Image (cartoon, rainbow, N blue to C red):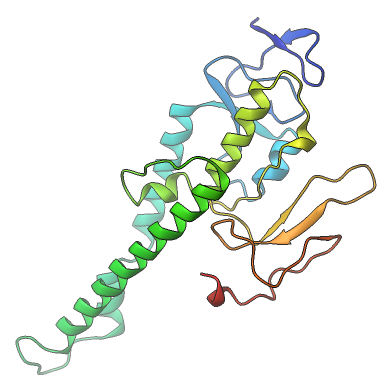
Length: 227
């Protein structure tokens, strides 16, 4: 088998986990060429990594699965033009350049403004979490959102460190699309629960919230104020 340093102090050698085997922060490391990643569709990726229910996958396989899942969602969800036509059915009589054309044009303008705003906030989140990464296509955010990139950078830091200290590295809590979940927490230490705080989908701390231990309710904040 391929020998790697064991978790913890790394003073001994152990067999690396091959592709397809369950893995986590506290398990043996994955073999060369594969990484420990949450399964596609995992609702609690942070929980999976901490409890050893993630899986060793190659980067290529992981991206192919993410692309297939994204394309599946695109086929299931109606497009902007389809939603516009269903919401505003054509009347019995209308001019050549009537109300329907105006509504389509307005919908396209709103969509362009939304994409520009989204690209701006993604850039802000990248500058605070890790060095800026150039995104060739905006749709890539659904394949690898800012939270998922932050998580992979943290896992890479754990993998490359000489002494593995999991509590010293914050693993973010991501949703299925790779964005930050509203509630973020640091790992617990024994019986003492870690500090929690509220963020928006791009990882920015919500104004008016404090770092608290225990049960912190983040759903009470109006998302329209931060998104």
